[in-house]
Amino acid sequence: MKRLLLLLLLSPLLGSAQVTIDTLHWSATRRLQLADFHSPTQPGLGGSEFYYQIGYEVRPTSIWSQPAIESFCLMFRNLSWVSETARNERTLAYNQILFDLVEVHTRLMQAKLIALGADRRFKQQARQIEYLTNSELGAEVNRFRSETGGGDDLEALQKWEKQIAIRLYDTPDLVTTFSASKIGYGVFFGGGGILPTGSLGQTLNPSAGVVFGIDIAFQRTMLMLHPTLYNGTIREEFWHNNQKWEKDMPISPMLFELGLGRVVYDGPRSRVIPYVGYLLFDMSPRDRKDERYKGLSLLTHSPILGLVFDIKLGDNTRKPDLSENSFWFVRTKLSYSPILDAKPFSGGLFNLQIGLGGFGRTRKVHYKPEHTLISLPGKML
Image (cartoon, rainbow, N blue to C red; front, side, top):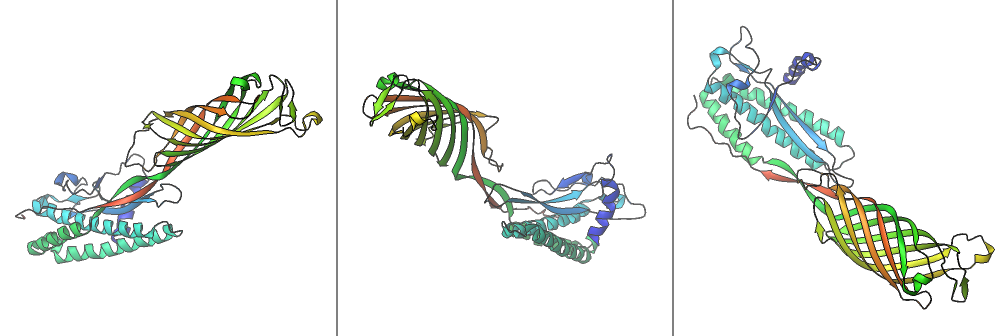
């Protein structure tokens, strides 16, 4: 009945764009004041009236992670009032105890919502929990008003004050915190070119192409899977495994890098990752339907040594109160691979790539229990 009355009172206010709902959230350090009661005194009524509301907010974190659930308890200051004859410390204490009681039930509701986890029927169950919480709260509020005579029974009021203070301590505030997962993932897309050196530089022309990469991180260790497709030509004809590669033949070199790196610097604006790994070099004619080039194939592998430099985009200052931990970046990647095959296909490959990518880590939500200690006045007026 109390909640229905509140909604009826709020309906005309919510429908008017010119009226601002004036609220005050519960605080352990900020106690109620007479100035918080903004509604005009109701004609012919004495005492006071306190209007409250409890609720919750669900913030998604990431896939496979539980959502962050926060609850709130607030006072409608523009609806709450104190009559001229009741503007004293006892009235403040009476309404503060009521506000603290609402906060206790708000915390109990949050604990029940958190216990639901990532249930598929979360919305339905959450609505039921909110309804039951409001019902239990309404019943206890009515009992509090009855036992204290609306604040006139000083002994009962002091008894409730002590009980609620104990319950506030025994029902901790569950403060939402986040921690980054050890596992991170990223993608990278761009273009680049290869520059052959040594004997290989006399065999192949420099080539250009596109790269698509996947990064998988465990803490600061990075596994990089970067396939690259280039287009180039043969500079001078050569024989390899009894196959003739003709001069000016269009070719499609494919490089597959499997690298293991370490993030040696990770700041708000940049990131540096040196790495070592394995390079698979697969070269084939660009036009495989050409009868002259059928059967031509060259496959070799070599070690690789490289350096990745990422320039992060946007504001990437770590904020523990946020559930997001991801960023976009512009990447420059330089690597060298010594080709250890027989002549004339020996030498080395410099590989330069530039592109755009993104990286992120899932963030897990945690709840830190904080016990609330309320200091009670030595004397109640």
